[in-house]
Image 1 (spheres, rainbow, N blue to C red):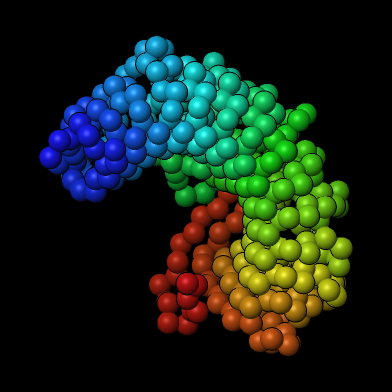
Image 2 (spheres, rainbow, N blue to C red):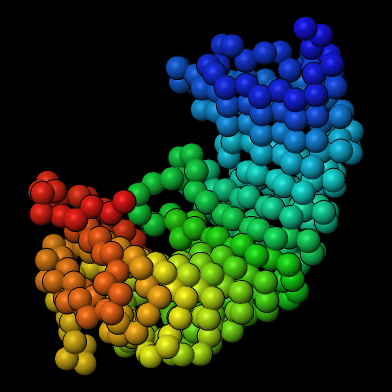
Amino acid sequence: MRLSQVRTLAFFGIFKCVPSIVEFKLLQVLILHFWGDEDGISLDITGIWELYRLRYMQVTCNVILELRTQMRDLRSFPRLLHLKLPAETRLPDGIGHMTSLHTLGYFDLSSNSAENVQSLGELTNLQDLQLARCTVQTDNLKNNMQCLGMILGKLSNLKSVTLVPAGSSHVDGMSMSVSGDGLSSISSPPAFLERLELSPHVCIFSSLPEWIGHLARLSILKIAVCELVKNDLDILRGLPGLTVLSLHVCTKLTERIVFEKAGFSVLKYLKFKSSVPWLKFEADAMPNLRKLKLVFNDTGVELESHSTAPVGIEQLLGLEDISAKIGGGGADARAALMTAVSSHPRNPRINVKLVDCMIYADGSSRISVPPEPSSRLPVP
């Protein structure tokens, strides 16, 4: 086989069998999925800078990737459209010179310099930006969140932005989260943005950023806020294309959140996480909602003569599936939820999982499954 003529290489296997990449001179598509059986091993992939025809590169692995380069190397990739590397990979400074990129992932906000974050603003063709937080260090992350807020408006072609925890920062709970308010003052948000997923394990906003209300094409939103006020609900219900909403409210609710008939006309999936599920659905609310997922604690507190179960679930006429995780024992809350669902005319599927205390007022969470699974209904 003449390796120099190969245009596409996809390798799946063990680390020791990874082929020499530089032999594939005309490679356009490179997909590597490999793993090593020892800790601390690394692979030098600096040779990719010799593959000048490369258009798509994706690497998934459990080893450390070394990617040494100089600025001139980054300028020599006029055709590279998609670059996806493990979150722990240290991307070279000057990433902004790769102006042809449509997809970039993962870019670590916790380890990259502020200058490298600012250089992302030069990637004006970028459509999919995948961000990560790989270390527990918070000062650099806070500064880079500020920088990110300043450059997102320049990326006018963006359709998707995700921010996830990875590496040593991926711990159970939210104690390592930082304020997301550095992203709250974007003056000109990307008009074509369809997907915005910001993990609560990385950042939490004081309240819902107002600029989210200008994202007319937004379809998927995942976000955590310290508190939810009526104006935030007005922003959310004003998003005409919203089909998936995952909302985490970190402080304890003092009154029910009311979902009215107006808005959320195409919403199909709603996940709501808070210490109490004080929700109320009025008649004709969310007519296309198919799946409702709740995560909360059994506090034993009642409101308006009702238990902590949401009010008006029977009003969600399109509902097909309900799942819940309930902390703090949860037997009473489970019974209340089952009673609330029993009056639904379509008899939706319901799965309830009881766990130990899980959500706290400051937004932190700890999950420990009790040792008596036989009385629990499993969540698929």
